[in-house]
Image (cartoon, rainbow, N blue to C red; front, top):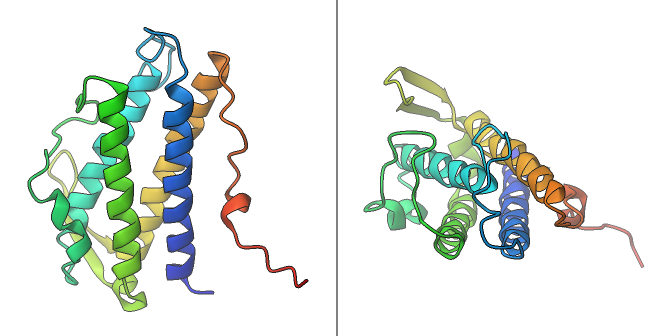
Length: 180
């Protein structure tokens, strides 16, 4: 199977897991979402916000790809975060709506993408303005890996707060090929 097939699988998994996280977070008592828990970004809200920020930053960078992906058009007028912890939304409902919209863009982007697009170089500048050029397929792997890293933190924070997110394994999103 191709790299593109696996990236599409990761886009599906990403969307599924993000919905599970936000659904679980919505069960927290008032005040718990923003409670300081000693995580990289403080609270569960800070962690979820960081993922919104970084996904927005990366998706805006992806708009510079030579293929000119139409799926990224909805982000053209969106905020361009200047800090990795810049608050984007005040409450969980608004964050969830933004997350749902971003995940739809990610799935559409991967559906639009062609295998050859993955080998092209993506030129961008990091948050400090340092220029880079990297293979787009590898950057996409980083994009999904980063999300998985912080979602793991978020599931731990939810678990510590007494909320069970349920099974989080990618395996559940891989089609079972067992012949009947």
